[in-house]
Length: 107
Image (cartoon, rainbow, N blue to C red; front, side):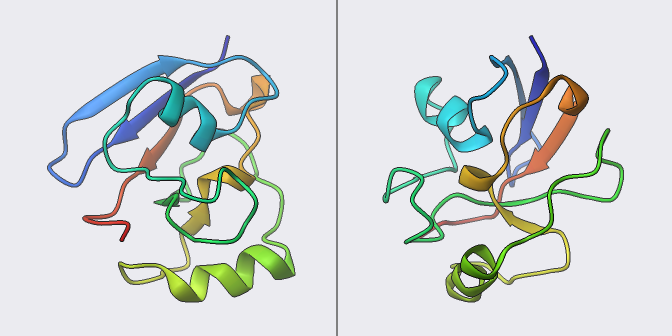
């Protein structure tokens, strides 16, 4: 299973083995990772699963679509070029080693 690392605002890290096909948000919620709320359940309606994915990602992610782009305007912490909604990042074998940084707050 691909390993995904969640880096909290305080720089503490938690690495999880997640099944292919799940999302980075769902993995966080199932394993009680602090820092991802996911209030809408992954339907691109709340922006409470905001993460930062840097250019050092192990694989290219799918492009941000118009729905995700719109919701990223409503994040509690500043949006950057590295901002993504973790509900829109599906885990694949190519994402093994992905590191996502969590914002200071989601709400």
